[in-house]
Amino acid sequence: MLTSKQRAKLRSMANNFEVLYQVGKSGIVDTIVKQTEDALEARELIKLSVLENSPYTAREAADELAERTGADVVQVIGKRFVLYRRSTKKPVIELND
Image (tube, rainbow, N blue to C red):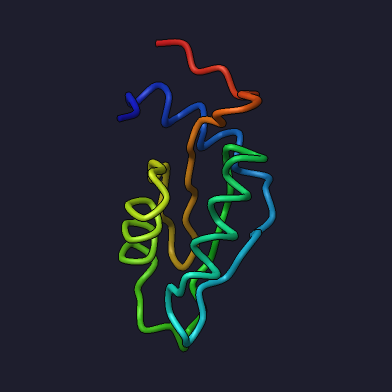
């Protein structure tokens, strides 16, 4: 669980990130979960978006992907959301608090 200070730091870091993956009309399938897990292990902090034709809202997609990958939802704004999970092999982001 992230504190408000940690969440604020992660939000500021993700501000300039490009969207890495999109949740489309097929919803959250095993391939998007696997890709998200791999990206979180490599980068720790990723930004995703939900397309108009998706059966999920951004909040629903963020919550489900976070649950299935063991990540934390950092932020949800409009159709975009940011996830964070500390890397088990090479942690890069240092959250002190």
